[in-house]
Amino acid sequence: MLSRDLLRVKTEDKSIRPSWIDRERPPYLDLADKLLVLHGGARGWTRGRIEEAVTGIVLESAWPKMVRGLAHTLIEGAHFEAVDREELEGRRRCLFLEAARSRVAGTYVREKVIDRSAKLLELDSSTLEEDLYRDLPLEARLLRVSPVQAPVDLIDAYNDLLTTTLLAESVRVECTIEAGETRIPPELMERVLDPKTPLDWKRLEGGAFGLHAQAASKKSRFPRGAAELLGMILAALRNETDWQLEGTVRWKRRSYALALPGSRS
Image 1 (cartoon, rainbow, N blue to C red):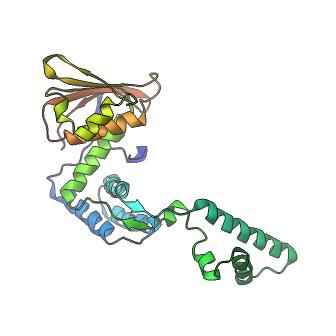
Image 2: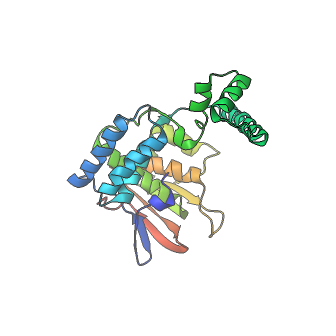
Image 3: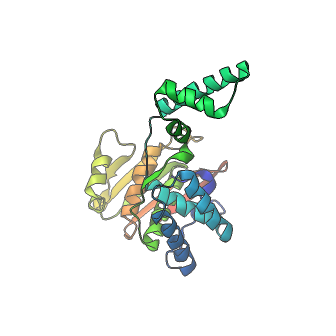
């Protein structure tokens, strides 16, 4: 999901809705294309290097929050390397202890401390030094880029993620699909019908299908799993017109009414 500082919403009186990006506006499509080009050539880069490159685009843009939101959407769909955090933490501990002993003895020389630590760990000195902080989030290397390739698809993916993130701020949500559950993809419907699903469901009059989620209290939000599942369902219904959603969102200590769908411009 998007972090709260990247959540773009529009509020009016007591209503709230996602501030979707218009997928037909050329400047937004150009911005999405620029980020796709950046990420397309970033395989093997660290997350920190990618963030620095995105910051460069942010500084040149009139829509910094939008840039970071689109970039985050690409990161969500990407795959970064996994490392053995416990092993790397152990290496650091060994090196830092050796450095502390050397400082107490007054014999500290950085290269010699690294060499002695590497010998204790049965590693090459260069390997120990290069991988010393490889378990930190910004040091993770990009192995596989997001499958999103077209600017319009990136904007759609961002708008879907924005909707899901706003749903995660909800206290209560009621979604009605007039044409019934056949509009929900089978793999998602299977999750809806699972007894452990975070969403309640029921068949309504006239063949409609209803989904419901409720937070434990007025001061809390309903489960993240409910928001994610409902967000995927709404993404599948993005181009449909026979559904509606209404709910209550807690945003900046106030309650707002949420009503979807709406214009994505």
